[in-house]
Length: 398
Image (cartoon, rainbow, N blue to C red; front, side, top):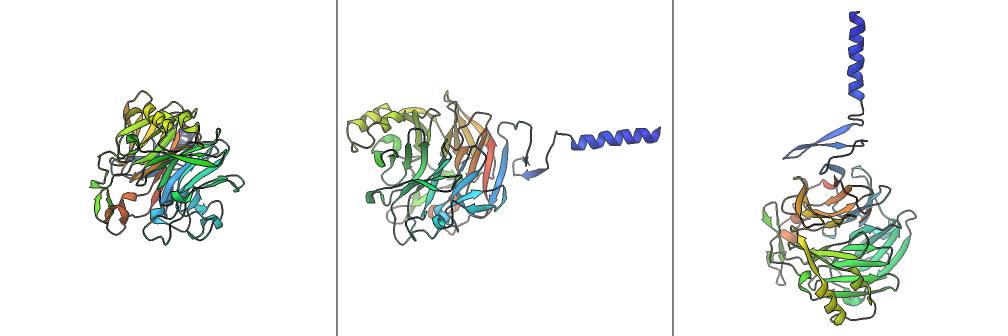
């Protein structure tokens, strides 16, 4: 009888150990503020704000995006170039491969079909991976190159669209982008010395700039990361507090509203996307239509100093917070709250939704780069692709 009771208790204990409460092997991740559990897989709904490491990288991701079927792609930041410029990432440590092939990931400046400084990436509903290549622009680059916008079919790896910007665009810094694949328009933030929103009409292979508006300019707000002011060399090479203008840019789910703001800024703006689309190929800057666009720009709400934003299907905005190593949420009704804070979020560069409520994050310690400090590079691997559960309906790849 005692033996039967012992066997019963042992069986119950064994069942408790393998019950679906834990389901799959989990890895504990310690951070200075808390200890979190990263699940390789789970059937339970994650908690809002749950943060996981997807991949640890020995190269620096620029921007990340995810497809509807769970594939993950990232650019490699031009400030720390590696052996590739655009990669597809698998979960784990340093598990990546060049995308779409080795030719496109050749030496920057070595040919026409090479990505020189890939940065903004997004995937549309047709499984096209859009990439903005703002050309060679780092101090050690031998020769600046024209920026280009390219799109690859993620299933066939074939180039399906290419737009080479005019020579006049050489030296601009086109970084983040928002893609309306259904209508054939791409909106790009140029955070260079003459900040602008650049609109590419892929139907007619034309582009134009909206510029000279206060909403595009940096505000007089310092970017502080790890307690230090972000610096940037002026025209004389002297380091001064950085003032980065328009950078994060997103679209509403219906493609009718464009959202944007300066990195060094605390204001999030909106504008009619239709006003940018109409006549995008047939009017110069500074005309009545530009003034019409400017007059219709509205303040949506406050935001932190940030490098990336993603907008969900309900009109909520998920914003990287560089100072607090966090992701904040600006709700559709204008309320700013904290989604997650973690000391590993050292310069969350951008955010993109996957095919559910997971928001993917590229983390790259960019503030430790010499161009922002005037000192040797203090960036130290691993760099991360992470994800956080938002509890909202995202727009895959955007």
